[in-house]
Image: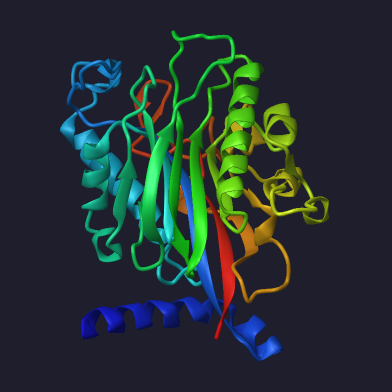
Length: 348
């Protein structure tokens, strides 16, 4: 027990450090907690999974996905996740949502990379119905996120479509800083589908959020993922109801989207035809807003941007450096950049 107490104490001390300037101004101490999301861009192993269309990611498939490429992909993704540990998050994130992972095996292989072993991450994952076989999942630090339960809520087409199976909504329940938190990890239908498919997703996530708040009005709900739409698109702005400004959130159930103004400022998480989009969002309920930091509150949001994550030459200079481009193995990271939010709470 003594060893566990010492480890927990170290984590809390580390968490207090990044916002020391704020503490000096108020005479109070604060703990900071990081919550992140990262699209893994086709994290497949080299083994065929029954009932999955993973043939492109086999040694004899279109991408000639060999053990060497898989090994490098794991190392690259682990490098990024480990780099989430920085001045703002010296203990690393409490929770990391992930998308485009094939199965639990690739999550275990990723977690076991040398860069990630010190964090002691646990895995949340359920096999979904996506026809390509990619799922949503999460890593969490059990010292910072006290896991309670999870479930996968299926995506249901309102027109009864049962052919175009896609990712469900991974609802994770736990505690951060002793407070009830629900994180919904998403990967909405791609831009290849009609926009109404993502509007369906927005309405379903809103219903999930409302049901969580009906169960416990104090729960802090965080919605994260690759939504395949920008903050001002109908699926997010209207179907899900995420608002651009904090002052527009009048009650706890209202959703605030901090990424709208970030995209308007010219920053995004993926590029298409030289234009930035910001599909990778972390949106949350209004009870995380405000200046009363005796309870858990939103502090800031940011795109995790590091020089090594970008192409530095050629046609796609300035784009995120992805795994493949034009069918060529680039030994990169992802076509998406990660996103993070920081939550703070006064330490008594």
